[in-house]
Amino acid sequence: MREWRPHSEEKISIFEDYIAAFVKAAQRAPNRVYIDAFAGDTVNILSTTGDTFAGSAEIAIGAEPEFTHVALFEKSAKRAEQLRRLRDDHPTRAITVFEGDCNAMMPSALEALPRRAPTFAFLDSDGMELDWRTVQLLADHKRGVSATKVEMWILVSTSGIVRLLGDTKDPVGEARNVERVAHLYGARGPWERVRAARRAHELEPDEARRAYLFLYMDRLANLGYKNLLARPIHNSRGELYVMVFATDHPAGSNIMQWAQEQPRVIKRAPALFDVPEERPAYEDLHTGWREELAFELPNWEDLNK
Image (tube, rainbow, N blue to C red; front, side, top):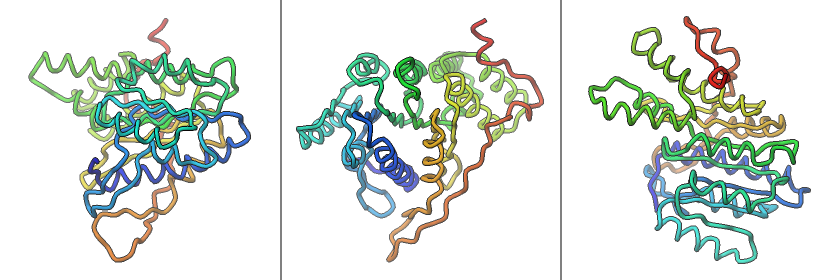
């Protein structure tokens, strides 16, 4: 059992709405695939009220029509055992639990999954654990055999990036932080220019945070994803991270936008009645963002020339 704040339950409720729509839209396909790179706990508790709620793996396994293939990754041995018990409750299903680092295990896992099937990947790390090579593997999984790529919903830890790239007097620690960010993006260059601009006070903190996010979205666009949505997730102190949705199918984009905008009950404290709150409308802040900068950024594609 793991304790979460209300923003995490809100994220999972968006996920649940989208999963229900995804399997319904793909119901005529002979196979439907779900990949959870950080599957986590099967029982979760809300810190503000003590209520429990299902995790992503349980929601996906319970979807109707069902996913024909489910791949669950979990580094914690204890949580992996919980996932195996969940798998064993569905003995007729093709559910595989991978105990270990998803970045290391993803290549072999993808080899066992149907490549033509509609596929949704939930990449919900605790922070900076997702390597870019894993994202690229997923994007390439169906390339050449299907008209659409794997859909992905990715946690991008904007607060983590800002923290790692902030000023520090520890050169060893700074080198380690830079390497972590390089693994996240799979390259250097543009984000280093943003870091330099922030340190030179050419960018305000929020502007740097946005730039780090949009650079990640640029990387996804360069993989061929034509539809990208960003949903910031906040707590009382500000933005924690952004959930980025990547698809090359406009229907997927429309469904996720609908799911993100649905009124939701945010259980910030015990209450007699659950009152849904209006959620913010989607805004496309990514398109044309580079033109708003006062300096020129190198393009990711230029790094390979």
